Length: 425
Image 1 (cartoon, helix red, strand yellow):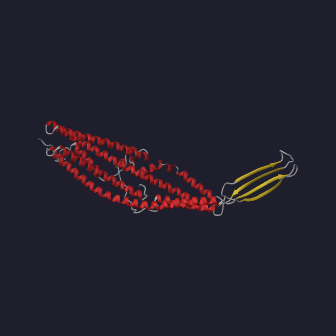
Image 2 (cartoon, one colour; image 1 turned 60 degrees about the vertical axis):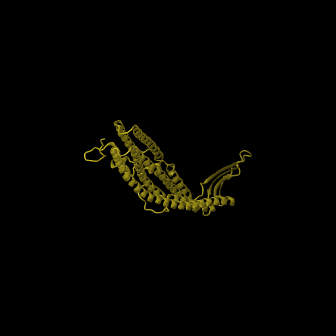
Image 3 (cartoon, rainbow, N blue to C red; image 1 turned 135 degrees about the horizontal axis):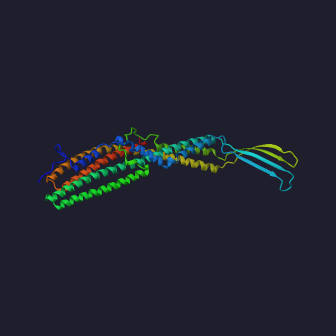
């Protein structure tokens, strides 16, 4: 029985399709994640660009300008010298429908709502707190969008690695089936071996189909967040290791809850000053005459309208604002503890992922080398087909774990940055 030369041994010998496929696959799976080539940079979407695109599509971003305009309008109202818009009063009195003696009276006046003591200052404080709450709310919403993009982003990379590996597995299975068919025809192997090789090829085809479907699903999930992806090119560079070690007070979620608590506190103080409706300063001029032929008299009226207080209504406003403040402060404490625990867990995942990558790379390298040994011995007739198939499956699994480990490491870094409140850079 004539043996074929081992792949890649001896100068001038041409590498078969299987060796080329494995070499390309190994270079892709074992090399560190890197960004796209320079000539494709313009059409390659980065994680930062994907996050920005997703944020522009988000409803919170679309309504950001309107919310800021509303906060500015509230500030303008609080800066006014009157509590509410002016009211104009016009009236006319005549005896034309009864005696018709020429009695006439015309009144033109204006009502000026006045601030209650301390109400204007507290209204200005509420307006400032509202503006801060709007900004922090938008920052927190953008941070949440970044978390969704990060999860979908690395899910696509994971599925694409599976497709690449499935293609390499199929190429290897097809090459093996071809070799087995040739040797079966020559009488070196049985038809049972041919069936096993064909079954392994069919299994590789099914695995590739499943991987392609999973990639399409993951890509659609990313598109649903970011919108269309140009040419489907995604940068593979992991995010940088953050320098922060704990949740900063400027964390978007902590800022959002802190501003909510501040807004509730300011609202409670404002409600405390609104024990009654706003008083009004009334200015009016009256022009009247008693009978026909008498000149009109002109007079000016100055008055103040002071409503009575309502303790029940005032207490309801104060209690409601106090409840909002308590809830926001309690949520702030809970969220701070949750973030601290999440950061510790994320940091542990990053450390663990580095160890997993090293071990998975070592296993993949050994499995790749072992597959070469068994491939040669199988061609020499020293190894049976079931052993060869088992070694191939072990090598494929080792390569899959190595690729997954790198994606999981990149995802762990993104999760750590997400827990720290950092956006993609």
